[in-house]
Length: 245
Ligand code: MN
Image 1: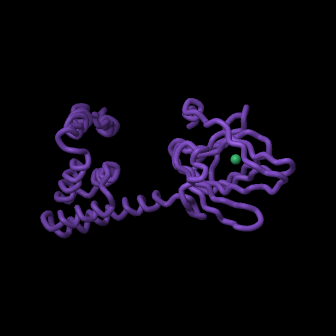
Image 2: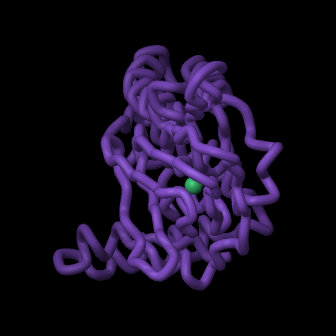
Image 3: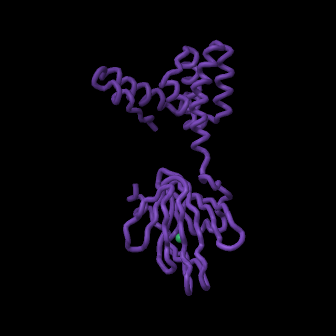
């Protein structure tokens, strides 16, 4: 598959159209795309080491460190690649490369912490059959009012469902992290962010979950009621879900 690159035309398309074309169509479109000869992962190693060996630790180095991560090179491997290359390319170049690599890694760490301030908890295996995608549960209370921190990976949502009760009941969602959606049957979907509160009366058919491109966490508070039970219904299909931004 061809690697899609538009940086050349975006940054230099007007000023140097030939350079932009060679960058986007030849370097990326042809050379980077020869995955049958050398994997993207290996190409990232060659590129990172080449830039580092020249002492070129600018925005292109940063771009290639991020690309290396996307191409499956772990933090530990990136550290080892730079350490190894420093012996051949020069120690000060190793230092300079690590200074920038640390910034990229710090962003990685931030991005890898999901679940917000209450934490991610365990994979939601018990209710997995009522969810599309991976979700996580962290039970925060063991007596009184049950409160659970629910985290959805990007694209994950629960099936349509109803919190049934003879009296009282229902559910309160306190959004704590990321971006997600809540929808009641027959109504427009509501976009949710940290700090939003959703009050769901018993007997109302609805679903909640993450946005396509974002993790999402909310506290789910079970409102006490008489003879409460969850009624799980059909999944939220890709067609309706994919219309959401
Ligand atoms: Mn619910």
